[in-house]
Amino acid sequence: MDPTQKPAGASIVAAHQELTASLPWHDDQDVADAARGFLGAVEPGVVRDAEGRVVWDNDSYAFLGGDAPPTVHPSLWRQSRLNAMQGLFEVVPGLYQVRGLDLSNISFIEGTRGVVVLDPLISAETAAAALGLYRAHRGDRPVTGVVYTHSHVDHFGGVRGVVPPDDVDSGAVPVLGPQGFTRHAVSENVYAGAAMARRAAYMYGAALPRGPRGQVGAGLGQTTSTGGVGLLPPTREITTTGQEEVLDGVRMVFQMAPDSEAPAEMHLYLPDLHALCTAENATHVLHNILTIRGAQVRDAHGWAGYLTEAIGLFGDDLEVVFASHHWPTWGRDRAVSFLALQRDLYAYLHDQTLRMLNQGLTGPEIAEAMVLPPALANAWHARGYYGSVSHNVKAVYQRYMGWYDGNPAHLWPHPPVEAARRYVEFMGGADAVVEKARTSFAAGDLRWAAEVLNHVVFAHPDHEAARELLADTYEQLGYGAENGTWRCAYLSGAHELRHGTGGTPASAASADVLAQLTPEQLFDALAVRVDGPRCWHDHLVLALELTDTDARYRLELRNGVLTHTVSLPGARADAVLRLPAAVLPRLAAAAADPAALTAAGVVVDGDAGAVERLLAALDTPDPGFAIVTP
Image (cartoon, rainbow, N blue to C red):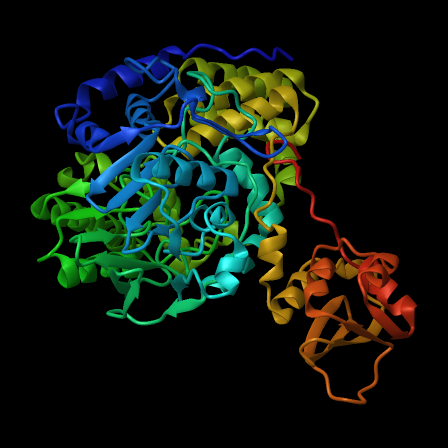
């Protein structure tokens, strides 16, 4: 199979020319805002870990200059150029951001004695580099507090790079987060963490070269860093809208926004600076109602409502709106207009999807019919660089109606491989389908070419002509995508067809994250890894006694299901495990065989074979499972 990338086809070139003529290029306010307040950059823009491995390379985006090449959507090219601007920026005196050192921003709020850190990126290494850049320009101020706006890893994972755990444990550095933060931060990265990480490789283009024919950015930011992920749980929870806290003399007023962009999320207002942080609920993109890496569907209606509430709470007093991605918006009128348009964006998609589904349209039909009003279509910050109108509409439909569209023909379809074999046979065989697909490809009907070629590849995985033409088709779809994650997904599909699987990033379920799972969450994490058919006929009961907390639990494996309850003293069990709570995560990680458990300080009374049978029942997630092939 030819591994080389191809140039943009005629249909993509024509589409980009048409788009270039229609986009609102006259509105260049973003260009000025993204550069405003620049103080200095990390030079070179590369961050390495302790072993010298590169965990972030912003300099690899140096190719983003001039006009967009034919292989990149002109609007995405513009967004990526703005996102790649790296350095320390003054938002207002006393409030600074470092952008371009990770997918997200880290902010520094100067206090009486030191500086409060807001959302410390994904990796300890990038967060430490950002803090070093801040200190180089603003002095060697100590970190006197940390605030997490929400429970996604790009807003807490780098915390160990800005504050030692001992300072948090001692109470010297308070850590604030929204109610439910730790529970959601750890559960999302454990229960479905392996599948999310695999799909995130497509979403962010982890295996793709950077350049005009490869990864150019993800819309929300350029990409994700790959350093050490940590988690220091909040020492102080924010629970109610209007709650006020003071860290190192910095006054903060909070607004709760649960089940919006994240299940645990909040906004914060800095009244002395007249600055509102909207976390990730108002950024310079149309965000995801359902991210393509996979997650629970978000509440677009509630999301819009929080932005309405934010305008009412803070709109009369604010002078700047900033977020944990992209650049700020200055001036009260502009800031309120920005918030209102972002609000209208999510409300419109929600309300119009409901209107059309009540007329009988299905998710894909609504996605094709949805047209944004001119005020939203002509706002750069409402464009689908990260979320998209297409997949967000389908997400709203899914939230209300589920996967089934009501058509009985779709109630019990064949799985992909069996359906593919039948489709290909009906269409005259693999060779005939490929030839017909070549005609569709040449005509620019890339969506149809992808659909039919996907059937051939699933029916005949070794059909070289189908794989090659499907790779070429995905490549052209990637070139044409305005959405950064769609581009990465299409180009990743082409890359894997040509070169095989690879590039899946490590799961965010680091040792720090696993350590914060409650015992109940750990047992749930074990339960979703039980290979049911393998242990249908096993029945075992384990009692766990946590020696440092006196908590007792009963685990029962029966009918391929692992359940847990509180254990009563003297209850029957095949074995009793006595262990410190800190050893429990090793069970969830399946890193413990019986000998390793013993070495870690686990004492087993009774049938040690029962422990072995439980561990043997656990599946190991596959971090490189097939996506574009069966």
